[in-house]
Amino acid sequence: MSGGDWKEMLVAVQAGDIDLVKYYVSEGIDVNYEHPELMTTALIESVQFDQLEIARLLLEHGADPKQNAWLSKDNPISVAKQQQRKAFIQLFKFSQKRRSFWSKILSKILSKI
Image (cartoon, rainbow, N blue to C red):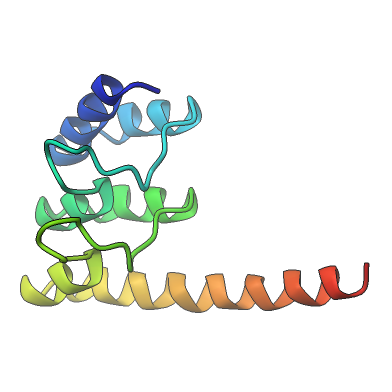
């Protein structure tokens, strides 16, 4: 996907257009991409615009809640804490535990190969 497509997805995240975000994700857009002009991620924007369901969707497709924005060094977790968005903080904690669980399972499987 091109940077232009990513910008359109970012606007969809901000507007809460989950169907359009689903479309871009299904087309293979990189959910962790940070555009060099906008210097933010879709997951950070989902927090800033209070789009919890979109954040959940992005996490399900590999978005990283620890990924820092380039210049500000903010990440989705720090933004959620700054804005006191408890639901996002809980979602990010759960996603990290889930990711850790599957990492351990995958490591065990790969060690037996």
